[in-house]
Image (tube, rainbow, N blue to C red; front, side):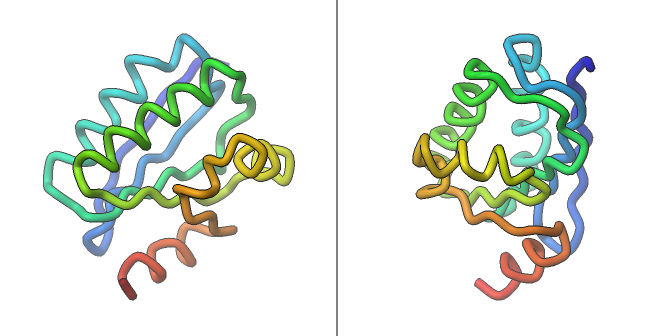
Length: 115
C-alpha cells in the first residue's frame, strides 16, 4: 500500500498518522510530515503506526533519520500503534532507546502532556 501521512496538533502534541508501507517510497512523505508537524514548534512528536502495514529496512532508516532530526531540534519522539513484531524490531535496532512506545495515541498524548 502506498505511503501517506496526516498531521494533527491535538493538545500541544504533533501527531503524524502514518498510513501504508514505510519503505523507500516513503522518503519524501516522511520528511514533509515531520516538517509540517514541527512547524508550530511542539516539544513532542507522536508517530501513530495504527495504519502501517509494512516497514522494511529502508523504512527503519527513514525513521532513524527523523529521530536524528528531532533530537537536533530538541524534540521528543513517541510512538503508538506498533505491532508486537515492529516493537521487537524497534528493540533490536535500539530505536526503542530513543522513542517512548505506547499502545494507544491517547496514552502517548497524556504522557507527553505530563512531561
